[in-house]
Every structure is written in structure tokens, then in C-alpha cells.
Image (cartoon, rainbow, N blue to C red; front, side):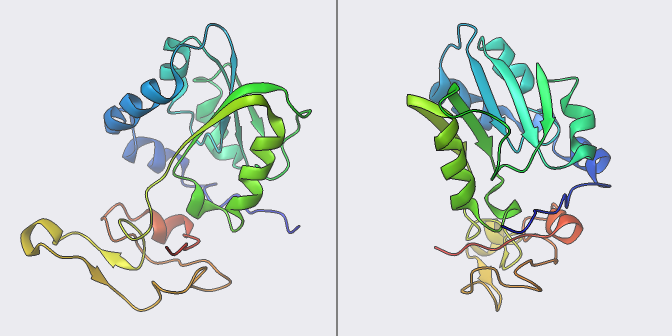
Length: 194
């Protein structure tokens, strides 16, 4: 298994400002419904990034332990989560069946092998444990779909490369996202297809 690259290192200040808590209303509503009350349980926050969900998880009663490969992102996460650990999500430094709940958001395009991450999370969950994952499919946002004129034109424009998983150099696309956020041009995007 090739080691993952911490692609977000050097972009965390921009990331935290661009995707601040003010952008989390819909995500927080979904997480509240998906997780319910934590009653002191530990929640594994997979690919936690800057720990943006830390306050919500704490409010719900979870002890959130974040895992991310980016030391730069963890600078922020350490102040927002009960604990933050630098780790590849495909190999978490945890014993099996150690947690009841795990959560993650929007990282499916930040890893080449999303299935390996899901298997690892499953290994760490106790029987009956839950993994609450929220992700937007790249047909709605990503480097191969242009959405900035969607409302005006009532259509999406797809560009060459959309139909190929891992499209881009070495499997990573490095052009801007079609939603205007520019994150794809900064850190790359491992494209997944339907």
C-alpha cells in the first residue's frame, strides 16, 4: 500500500477561512439527525481536516477524536476536538472494535482508495457501530463539471475526463473545481465516477 500524501499541507489557513463554520449549517443538520446524542461516547472523526465538526460533536455529547494525514490541518483540529492524531485513514492506529460511531465528510476525492478507508473504519467499529459519511458526488461538484452558470442556464457542463475514474496526472486532477471554490486546483482531486 503506497503512503498517502498530505496534499492539504500549506493550504490549511486558506481552507479554514474558505470553508469556515458558517458554511456548515446543512451539514450540521444532517450530522445531528444521523448521529443523535453521544452520551459521552467516542466518535472517530475520519479525515477531520481542521476539525470543523468538533463543536457540533461536543454539543451532541461525543468525545471526538480526529484523524488526518495533514499535520497542517491538525494545527486547527487540535483546538476543536478532544484529540487529533496524524494518521493515514487506511491504517488507523487503533485496536479493532474500539468505537461505536465514526463520521467523515467530503474526503472521498482526497484518497485514491476510498474503499480501503471504509474497510478500516469498519474494522474499528464495534458490532452495530455506525459510520455517518457525507459526500457530494463529483457529478455535482468537481474538476470535470462546470456549475457556476447552472442556475442561469439550467444545465451542467461536463468536460473531457469525467467518465474516467482517477482522471488526471497519476490519478489526480489538479484543475479547479467547477463550483468556484478552487480547492481542486490547490490540493488536487482523485476523481470518482458513478
